Amino acid sequence: PRGNRWRGAQLRQLLLSPRNCGLRTHKNQVVGDGDWPSIVDRDVFDGVKAILDDPKRVPGRTRARVHLLSGLATCYKCGTPVKSARTGGRNIYTCREPGCMAVARIAKPLEQLIVALVVERLSQPDFAEFLTNRDGEDVAELRHRATALRAQITDEIGEYDEGLIDGVRLKARIARVKEKLAPIEAQLTDTNKARVFRGLIGVEDVAESFDALPLDRKRAVISTLLDITLLAAGATGPKFNPTTVQWAWKT
Image 1 (cartoon, rainbow, N blue to C red):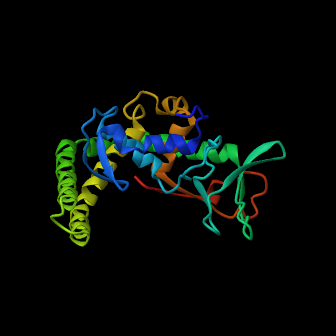
Image 2 (tube, one colour):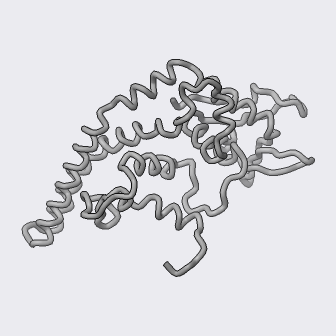
Image 3 (cartoon, one colour):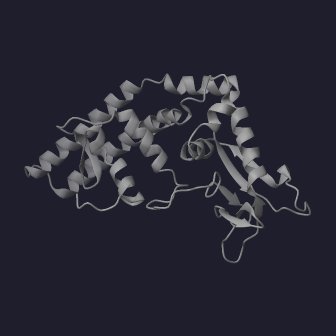
């Protein structure tokens, strides 16, 4: 509104606004449907929120990631996400935690290993079946139940505004409704995570399709699929050793 330059924090705040999909909020909590037209579908909003609320992300950071695994892979010793650096004319991933700094790994072969794992996993028939099953859930029914529960919260706030109940009873009633709402919203979020893999399932060449993605999409796919830990290099010398990388599938 003031003509200022867009920054990451402001863009994040805009994208996470429930008003985008026509939801009304009260004290930063969704309480029901608004009386204005939505600009995105609810499933699109939930999909965006699932990605931006990922604990691995750093809220408010304005500098975009420029390396595939920075902030995604972690140090085996301290558990801190590794950062990118450059040494000897090569990009590396290294732990920069004071008092630790236990790992440093050349970026290119590490990235090639992780991409190969991702492409292989996405190419497997059972993974496509998993996503089909998730997409097959009755999302419309879940949304209907969630909307009904949010309407209950709106009604409770209305009774409070009219002086029919006090603040203590309002808080207790909202807490009970939110207890029912939480698992439904979790199911909706899980269902929308399949959007991360759009364009990668059932294609003729998964490797080519993955390579064509922008960096943020690649990072989202890796973050959704894998936990990556860099182990001690040992006496491997300058040659990359895949056994010094530990990974575990999330999906």
